Image (cartoon, rainbow, N blue to C red):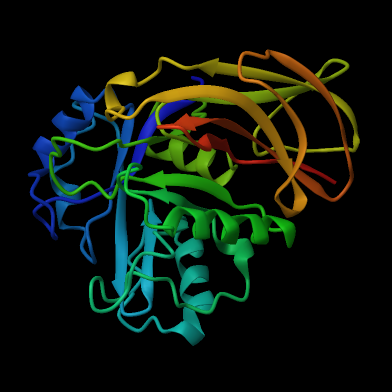
Amino acid sequence: MSYLPCELHCHTVHSDGDFQVKELLESAKADHLSLIALTDHNTFSGHYELDDNILPSIRGIEWTTYFGHMLVLGANEFVDWRDAVPENIDKKIKEVKTAGGAVGIAHPFQMGSPICTGGRWEFIVKNWNNVDYIEIWHEDLTRITGENTKSLKLWTSLLDKGYKIAATYGRDWHRPENSGHYGCTYIDIDGEVNQINAISALKMGRTVVSSGVKFFFRIHKYAGTYSIGDTVKKGTYIFSFFTDLHAREKNAGEEAIKYQTIKIITNGGKIALETQCNERHVTLKLEANHWYRAELWGKVDGESQPLAITSPIYCK
């Protein structure tokens, strides 16, 4: 399979959502999503109602604490969140990883107390190597809150420090919405669409955050082809872009969107190369100890902003 639209942050009546589990699955299927993760707050109770015959699903949970929310996907053992505090979060994350789970940071800059007590990430992570992904975009993309800008900056700073962390979008889906612009996370799932393969792809960093448009790249050198999330040697590579501007158009809001350029971003958030959005192939020399991600930019109601951001390729 090649980059399927997924939603990795969903809630039901088992916590604070309005969906019955079956209703969530049917809504996601009607929305042409390929997979969801059920991540109710501090409970697994909804897992028993999941039905992969309706839609493949990841069994997850959102650790909901006073110090931040952490998404745990696919753990095969119970790991207790109730004693998680800023000083021991590395130990708790390691326990999740030992249990086979993937670890994600939910909406790290969500407004905190008193609007959403505990929603802002205040845990003290010392070893980010055990964190698999960060929600760099969150909720309705038409809401200008500054959260996404700060989350993108945090993620970029961690990439600069050498951590290999994937980017995701989180709709934080609680109920049917009648308006708004909701994106998705495209995941490059190899083989059957199921929990195991989806989490494997997520841990490998094969993700793209998107407002809807399907956008990804691969790079080539001689006979070798490499994907998002891979690590390559320094040298000159051909970037091949796949861009479907019409994917998931039904999810768009009422804003006017004009797609413009593709930017290849590297360390420090610097632009290594910029080209037109319909470009298929470009050549770029990759430097050692650098990461490279692609961003599709355009204007939304006249304001320039990214509309899709890939996780990086890494150059050693």
